[in-house]
Image (cartoon, rainbow, N blue to C red; front, side, top):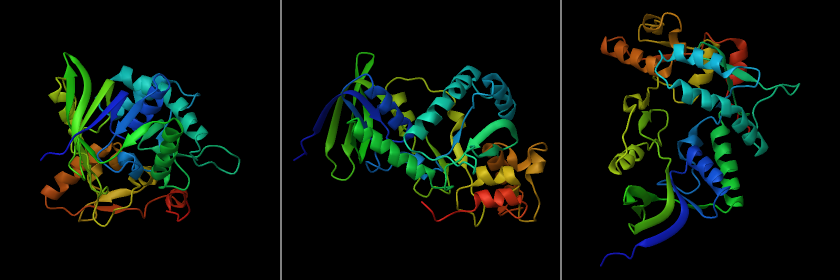
Amino acid sequence: MSAKPFVFDTDVLIIGGGFSGSWAALTARQHVENVLIVDKGPRDWGGLGGMSGGDMIVKQPEFAAKDLVEELVYYYDGLCEQDVLEEILNQSYERFKDYEKMGHEFARDDSGRLMSIPQRGLELMRYYFYHPYGKGGAHTTQILNAELQRLNVQRIGRIEITDLVKDGDAVSGAVGFHAQSGTPCLFRAKAVILAAHNGGWKGSYLLNTCAGEGAALAYGAGASLRNMEFIENWNVPKLFAWEGQTGMLPYGARFLNGEGEDFMRRYSPKLGAKADPHYNVRGMAFEVRAGRGPIYFDTSTMSPEGVEIMTPTAAG
């Protein structure tokens, strides 16, 4: 005998409970009464964002967005939608202030000035990090969950969505099942926001569960997909598991092959290992295929300032 399905009705259904889904819920709650988040992970886990550093790249008011866009266009070989990128940059400072208001503590020096890490070969981009370093993802999850609870946003974990439901051309809900009990679930909604990751892999995230369901659900409902060749894949050097390449590389860390060579100079003569991670992954693959593996991460060339900032702390 099959289990009786759970049926839920809501104004806005958000599929995916990471940072994007949580922020979408907070915004939706300003306009409607009933907002529901479903996620395949535990209710409070916060998606992959909870495993991040909780840091932000922000366009401060003194910078012009067009200058940062020009810098990023060069960095990514022109492979970016410049109008979308400019809009994201223009909104980034307000979101930064929102997080501070919610209690997120970005690192400041003794005078109260924000501390930042220069980005990989980028002169204008600033990487503002949580203090203590490396603990920010979990803290961001905590403050977002507290805000969702304050605003009475309903959240349900362990839900695997299998299909979107359509009424004509409009998406009107979703179906799936509870991953632990197997109970079928039907979610009926006036609007659906798909905030699930499109897939990828990062070896240092041993809990990585980006299987690409978000893209599959959208495609199954008739959406056209693009830019699927940019699915994120990061390799992790041998004996290196701690998150921090983004902070260490700008301070002089580098990748070495099995022969002790700073091999990224072969593939990116100007930026070396400070190139975009996708270039580094490609360079690592070429080196291993050429028999020059394994790949190591060398921090002995970091500046004293970088070592001090990037040293893990047990605080927090």
